[in-house]
Amino acid sequence: MKKIKIGIIGCGGIALEKHLPSLSLINEVELVAFCDILIEKAEQAKIKFGKEDSKVYLDYKEMLKDTSIDVVHVCTPNRSHSFITVDALEAGKHVMCEKPMAINSVEAKKMVDAAKRTGKKLTIGYQNRFRGDSMYLKAECENDVLGEVYLAKAHAIRRRAVPTWGVFLNEYEQGGGPLIDIGTHALDLTLWTMNNYQPKMVVGSVYHKLGKQTNAANAWGDWNTDELTVEDSAFGYIIMENGATIILESSWALNTLDVREAQTTLYGTKAGADMQDGLRINYVKNNRQVIEKPSFKAGGVAFYAGGEEKPSHLEARMWIDSIINDNEPLVKPEEAYIVTEILEAIYESAKQGKPIYLKRAK
Image 1 (spheres, rainbow, N blue to C red):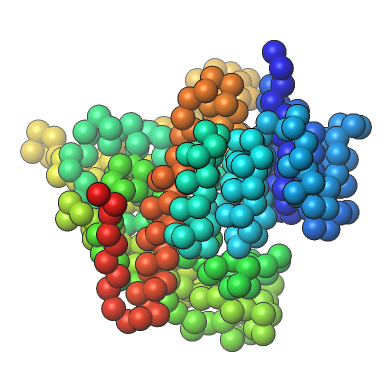
Image 2 (cartoon, rainbow, N blue to C red):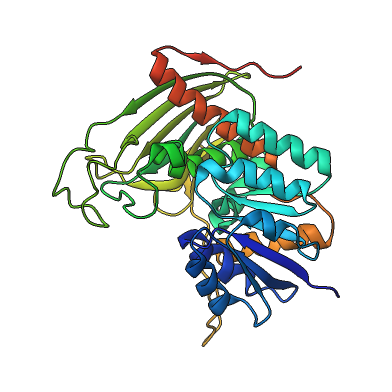
């Protein structure tokens, strides 16, 4: 079978640590092109993951001229996600774009429209959907185990873990801080498990409280207080069209011991679920309060060294399968667009000091 030829645009940390290792495990894939505005990064990625005849590019538009490339992975700073993705789709490539989809809903809509116009597949890198606990919870929701989920919390809280490398601290390049970086994962996971993509109204609070502090015991060392232009915390209160409520909390630096990232808590009419101590489902049975904890550990066979597939590996494999078998990717661009729309509304609500009402297309 003809191999799927892939080009990587942006050869920084997320490409080297997530996309390239995952793609390199798939037999049906061939990594044929590497592009970065720092040519040495593209060359290093080629040495580690490419073949002798793989090509290296400084200009992504030159790479897109290669008609043999089937798929492009966009792993650049957030500001460039939209226009690079649109250009790649227009060039006839399927696209996996790293999260968040875009810095605002206007740019995200361009991506959705380009995918529809070109007929090419587009997906966004929300790998937390591919965790064992996430997929189990999704199945429980689909099987109506929780009943109507009318309240949810999306958790993305770090005590002191501000990323100090790359352009994470740069609001212009990233579009925001923890809300758009890790809050996006928690919100995506929550909307997906609820299967509710109809937001009505958003109220947001955004805080710049700890950014000027030094000797802050940050996981990756002190951040540069002059470079940090993004928020350290952001919170959203989201009302859906059907009356359901979602509370989103995100922070890179917060004085708390309740640290939870890429997690959701669901409250339904039949049962509830959280991810505080592994996945826990709580309900009432025979007039007793019950807690159910499914196990996601491989076991039972002596000397068995296997285990669950890494979420990033499963994400890549299912993405490539969707191309080979011509079916929909698990993460649909229309869903990622709603995530972007809500995040933007949280920022806008905080800026204007009032609720933001979202109008759905009829």
